[in-house]
Image 1 (cartoon, rainbow, N blue to C red):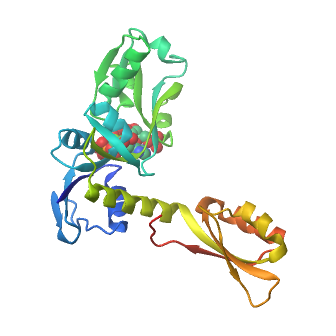
Image 2: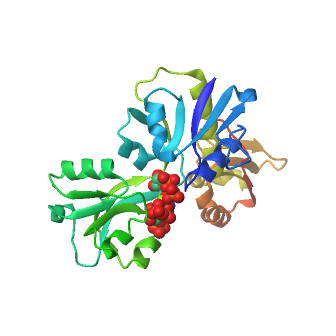
Image 3: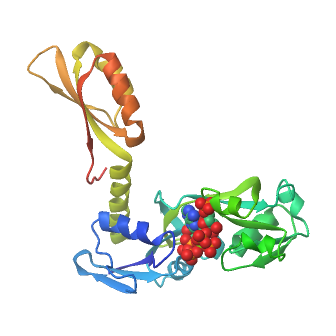
Length: 281
Ligand SMILES: Nc1ncnc2c1ncn2[C@@H]1O[C@H](COP(=O)(O)OP(=O)(O)OP(=O)(O)O)[C@@H](O)[C@H]1O
Ligand SMILES: O=P(O)(O)OC[C@H]1O[C@H](OP(=O)(O)OP(=O)(O)O)[C@H](O)[C@@H]1O
Ligand SMILES: [Mg+2]
């Protein structure tokens, strides 16, 4: 049986369960459930703090888990990323009151508040900077106003929290993060994990791509293929009119309208866009 760690609360929790549900697995209905058996898929889900997931997976207690890339690195657990999952995207950055510092090189001897001491410590060491790390559980942005830190290192998404605290980012981002599927480093290949990965990849593709169908004059197909090359190559079917063909190709969902405009301008007609419910590439 495959044992899968899933975040029980926080930014990752709902999106992780939604993705697993889309991939055909059972997910809990009650936020307090800690364990969920999914006999149809020979799987068991264990709902844990996202910060602890890499530890359970790295120790081999659980087979795979969903956590944040930043949490994985912060944990220093012997687990590695198998598949990026495309949600909970964020950057990990330094911030302070305007004018405090311009980069990591200015942080020698300063007090830096963070919930990611492992990640920050490694970054400072890589830059030869010795600073005083103040470890906090959350609400790190308030630490400067309360006088216990000079700068912070924290997760930034929209920047709203920083602005509200009167802080500005400085220097290069320490890292970019998103939700990731993790496995014990060096784990043996496992058919059950491969099925999970293929299913999750199918969800990612179904979310990121649409199918475009259109009719195209035969004389223009080469130029139409440049607009819709598809993943491997577009499907072409004959039409009753020998001068026209029907074309079908996968297109990035965020390019849908640009592609439709370009096809129309080229001379394609009856351009239809359909969402993908599920797929295996
Ligand atoms: N505002 C955000 N936008 C995107 N990702 C975020 C955001 N806040 C946290 N994350 C990501 O969520 C993961 C942290 O999850 P965790 O549940 O520990 O913290 P949280 O979402 O801040 O929850 P809480 O603070 O309620 O405990 C990290 O991978 C982090 O990058
Ligand atoms: O750039 P933003 O879109 O504002 O998002 C970033 C904020 O979101 C998270 O905080 P959360 O609400 O989880 O509170 P916490 O600091 O207590 O973890 C994170 O720790 C940042 O504070
Ligand atoms: Mg938080």
